[in-house]
Length: 385
Image (cartoon, rainbow, N blue to C red; front, side, top):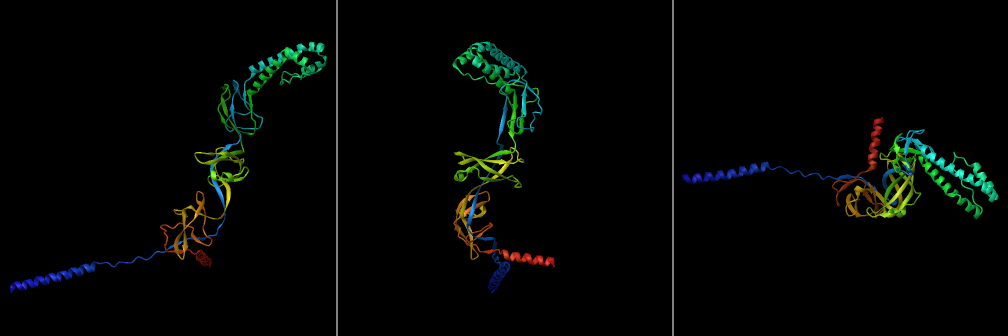
């Protein structure tokens, strides 16, 4: 009997413990809170196709259109002039850039000219006797002959006899020898062919200059060219003389240039066409970095949006009854920040700002610009009152 009572008590304890355990487990269950459905607010635009100007952006450095590399063809000591031969020095047209000491060579030129003068003088008696009809013109030539000036051209011969006589006296060869010496003498002075500035000076006063030695660089100021690369598909749209807008890196200054030259060949590596833009402005400097906006063509029935709105497989998001959908489009031109699209129907509502995590079928709320303006107006009125 005792064993039966103990068995019944033990069984009751087990049952009670099961109920207690179940109650403890049920008390630890937390109520699951359903998350509220979040509807993102999106910014949209209504599509209105129009003609979009296709503008090609290119950049490059300015280079002086007229550049002169100074080299010496003669040898001598570099003598100082009215202006120092220093970088940044400005010159007017015709002013002396470089003057090389030519005293010794000048003496040899004068000697050759004197020799020519003596030769012509020696034939004058024979001309008076044998060719009196040409004596006066040779006499006038001697009268006008000045050793301190350039040798004047010889009188033209009027007959074969006169020509043979002059040639036989070695006058022609002596004359051309003098002209050759005078031509070389002129190379001891290098004058500025145009108004400009010295950008590089490699010699100083007193330097011994040798033939073939580079002396510096000289450029014309105010007129520059910029070389840019244009995609080949727009090469036939560019025309010489077309106006081009240029800006500096900070977008603070704007300049106007013109297309001066277009290369007729395509760069095989980059598939671009080299185009040169001429800019005239006294504020510009050689080496400045500018950005050019070339108006290539007008694209009809198109829209322009941010590149970030274009999805993979050439699709964009549209809003239909507060739900996002995707439509296929055809990109026709890409710039750094924008893309020109065709194939978007008029009146459609598209996103004008990217939405993180957007997908087709996503429920969205269109941001109403009018409500925002109304709220802003009310706040303004309250602050005013």
